[in-house]
Structures are given as C-alpha cells and as structure tokens.
Image 1: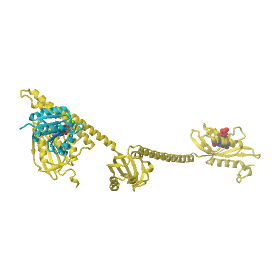
Image 2: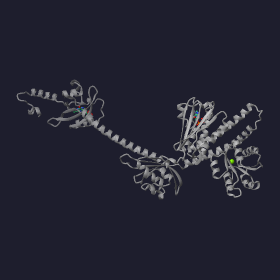
Image 3: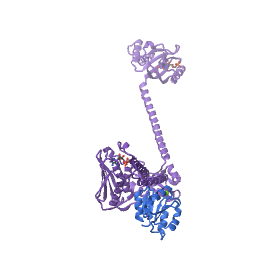
Image 4: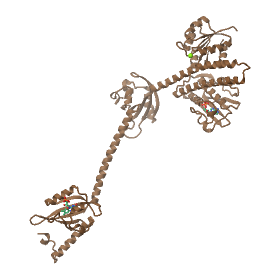
Length: 119
Length: 518
Ligand SMILES: Cc1cc2nc3c(=O)[nH]c(=O)nc-3n(C[C@H](O)[C@H](O)[C@H](O)COP(=O)(O)O)c2cc1C
Ligand SMILES: Nc1ncnc2c1ncn2[C@@H]1O[C@H](COP(=O)(O)OP(=O)(O)O)[C@@H](O)[C@H]1O
Ligand SMILES: [Mg+2]
C-alpha cells in the first residue's frame, strides 16, 4: 500500500495536532492546515487523496470549501470527511455531498475506519 | 261670656257645678293630653292637666301643676320649635308644633302640640290651652321611610359609583395590558381598540374604530389565516387559543403574532361581539432564537477543546505499555469516562434549550431501521464491557424519520439500561412491526423503579430519589427522548418493577410524522 496524502483543515490547533498524531498510524502523509483560505492552493500543489474538513471556520467555512470542491470538475470526486461539533453538522455535510461525517469529539477507531474506507 | 254661662253645657236639671264636673270627666276621658296654663301668672304655669297628659308624660298631677310646660323638654332646649312657641305665647297667638319631649323616665317622645290662647272680654289673653298627642310611632315610621329613601339613594349612588369604578377599572386594565385588544361586532367592524394595539401597529383610533378589520391600514390586516380563523373556527363556538400568525406589514415589517379570539355567547348587550387579543411575539421569538444561537455556539466552543482532550486520551489508552500498573490503567479509564460525561452534558444542555424553544427541526429521510438499530447496539456494546446487549427481532422496513434523533433516543435508552443495571449482565433490545409503526423495547434487569417514579421519568430534570446519589446524571436524557419521539408522532413509555428491571419502549410511524394526516 503506497503512502497517500491526507489534507486536514481545522482552525483549532489542538484538534489539528491530535488528528495528525492519530492518523500517523495509517502510515499516510498528513498535511495539516489551520487557515481555510490556503486549502485551494494546497489541493493544487499537494494533490491530496483525502481531505478532512472542519465545518465552522472563520472567513471560509467548511461547507463553502466543500462546495468549491464538488463544483470543480478536477476535484469533484475527491473524498472529503466533514468533522464538526455542531449539531447540524451531519445535515450540512450531507447537503453538500461530503463522503462521510464524523462528529466531534470523535472516536479513534471510527476515525481510522472511515479514513481506511475512503483511501 | 263663656260657654258655661251661655248655658251650652247646662244639662237639663243640672246645676252649674254638676255640669262642670261632667265636663271635667269628659276632658279626662280624652286620649289626647290637655293642659291649661294661666297666662296672668308669671311664667305661664300649668293650672290644669287631664289624665291622658299624666300617662303620656309619666308625671303625676302634683309634679305637673305649677310648672311651665317647658319641663317636658328636659335638657333638649335648643329646638327651633321652642322659639316658635315662645313667639306665639308672647304675641298671644295659637300654633302647632312637633317637639321632642321626654317622659319622667327619660324616654323621648314626639309631642304634637296644638296651643291656643283664651282671651277675655277685652281681648287680653288670660289662659292658654294645649292639646298634646304622642306621635313618636308616626314619627318613627316617617323617619324610617325617610331613612329608607336616603339609604336607597345612597345605595343607588354607591352602585353607580361601583359600576363606574369597575368600568374605569376594566378600562384601565384593558389600556395597560401589554397585548393588543380589539372588540369586533359580528361583521368584523372594530368597536374598540386599546392603546397597546394602536402603539404596536402604529395606527390612530380614528383609523381603526368603526372600520372593517380587514380594511385596516390599507388592507394590511387582510391576512388569509386570520380570515379563516374568524370565519371558520370562531362560529363553531370554540375560542381560538394561541394561534401563531406571521405577517409582513407594509410599514412596520414582519411580525410574529399570537392570536386569541373569543366570541361572546352571553345573551345581552354584548352578544356575538368578538374579542381579539393580539400579542406581538416577534421580539420574544427573536430572544429565544438568540438564546439557542448562544447555546449552539457555546456548546460548539466547549466541545472543541474536549475533542482534543478525548483524542489524546484515546491515543494514551492505545499506547499504554503492557507493564503499566492496574491503578494507572483504571485512572486513564476514569478520565475517559468523565470526558464522555462532560460531552454528554454539553449536548443535553443544547437539546433542552432547543426543545423548550420548539426549535428541533426534523430532517426526515428514509433509512433502514434494522441497520440503524444494530449499528447503535454495536456502538454501545463496544464500550460496555460488562454488559451483553442482545438484539432480537427484525422489521425489514425502512422508515421516514430523523435518523440522528432516533439514534440519540436509542443511545440514551441503552446508556440508561447500562447505567441503572450495573450488576446485571443482560440487556435485551427487541424490534418489531406493529401495524403502521415500528416498535423498539429496551429491557434491562437493573435497579428498576417504583410505580410513582415511572409516572415522572419523562419530566425535565427528574431523577429517581434513590438514584440521585448513586448515579451521575442531570435528568434530561429521557425528557429529550420523549420530546423527540413525540415530535415524530410516536410514543415512549416505561414499565418497571423496583429491583427487577425496566422496559422502555417506543413506537414510530413508518411513514413519518405527517402520515396520519393524509
Ligand atoms: C298651653 C301651653 C302648653 C304647652 N305645652 C308644651 C308641651 O307640651 N311641651 C313643651 O315642650 N312646651 C310646651 N309649651 C311651651 C313652653 O311652655 C314654653 O312656652 C316654650 O318653651 C317657650 O318658652 P321659653 O322660651 O320660655 O321656654 C306649652 C305652652 C303653653 C302656653
Ligand atoms: N433503565 C432505567 N432503570 C431505572 N431507572 C431509570 C432507567 N432509566 C431512567 N431511569 C430513571 O429516570 C431518571 C431520569 O433519567 P434520564 O432522563 O435519562 O436522566 P439521568 O440518567 O441523567 O438521571 C433517572 O434518574 C432514573 O431515576
Ligand atoms: Mg472550528
């Protein structure tokens, strides 16, 4: 199994750190990003195989990014996992065609399982 | 020349003396008091009184003769009748008065007194004759009548005042309530509008009273829902209670109103008039929404660091060296457990707030019921090491419901079954089809509860009395479950026996909450 790129975008540094720590177990390369405005260029540069997106982020929110991805032909089929502590998270994720939704706080095994399922 | 001498009283064969005696007897037989005073003597003393005068005054003859008649006035000397008498006596005239006199024993009596002078040949007044009648009884009746009349007048006055008072009182209530009030006649013409109505909808009395309700303010009150309400619902004799209407008013913008309408059934002046109370709840709803928003944000912000904590805890749990002490391992376990509890508390708070505001939105979608149940059971089973959850039955159906909400209910019931059955191993989950519903039962063999408690478990913040200290919790879980199931038009109930265990069951319509409306 070759190593894949996983781009994680969350405005909270703590969550970014812990996600990176956990997902290292999968053996994939983790690209953590705090600023949602950089996601677009990171997708172009790093060609991630999976994106993990927080929903509520300042300036550019997760659903806006997801919308951009789903309407850009080149990235349309990119697997995206939406993560959120918001009650409406799952609804918004579904409405914007996220590949999966994981509620915060997440369960370790569930997270790993979802990631493995998508790449 | 007097009557005697004219011989009028001279009876045949009788002497003057005999005739005088006869006359005296006649005077004594009179029921009116009769006295004669001698005006030629100082202070007009009484020289004669008959028997009736004695019995009327209570004095005996010897106490009467020689006195001026004023002794009957006792201490009551400032009556205007006394002056009338004094004047008459002075001028040698007759008069009639009603004067307050007092008997020997002190009792008051009203004395109707006729007094007239006796003149001699030269026209000089020699004597006065007084005829007295005790008119106390008549006076009393008269007085009572007057009193009665006065009382009546007073009562009428009081009643009128009370009426005017209560009318003023009612008006002031109507004017002070912070709710718009309209009175309409049966044709929906406005008969009156209170201050609050005028203020809320920025109109004047002239623009309102006497106008058709629908025509008010350039037809801005021509609201289909309101029409429907007044025309269809009210005539069925049902009051309209708390009817929410949202309407965009041309000048004042969008308003959320709570309408209460009531038609007067009582025979009389007000029959068939309609009272329409209009409460502007735009602001209240806005405040509730902001509270929900605040709690949403608060819970999101609280969960964010919690996510990090829980993530690290899970990393630690998984990287525990096998040689770590039992104490260390169980400590880690405890931390995880309490992190989980904190997380649940945060979610519950938000849920309760939303339920109270009526802000739980249902996102109904079809899903495979059996799979949802088995997924939830698996999820709980993976962290419940001391319990065995047995899933029985199949529905083989998909249902229309808000899956996340139903998952929440099932999670709640299973967590309770585990929490309140710490020493029992088995938990049974049964699913089945019942008519157009699916039914789920969660059966535990734990502490159970008293019949009394079963009636209250679905109340907000209710916690079993003995449960209180032994198990952590806020008493919100079942309340939220109940509200969710009710929102779906299903039912949630419990059967339980103390010390034996509990069965919590719920039903859900397979075709969604709107299914019974078609
Ligand atoms: C014949 C006669 C009978 C009177 N009978 C009464 C009587 O029954 N009760 C009474 O209060 N005054 C009676 N008066 C009036 C008083 O004697 C007296 O004239 C009256 O009080 C006014 O006088 P004064 O201001 O000196 O008291 C009678 C007077 C006269 C001449
Ligand atoms: N399975 C059960 N067995 C016995 N009692 C229960 C069970 N489930 C709930 N209860 C009782 O109902 C109460 C309310 O439950 P819940 O609303 O879930 O709040 P909490 O569990 O936080 O106390 C509990 O405090 C307990 O007394
Ligand atoms: Mg965020």
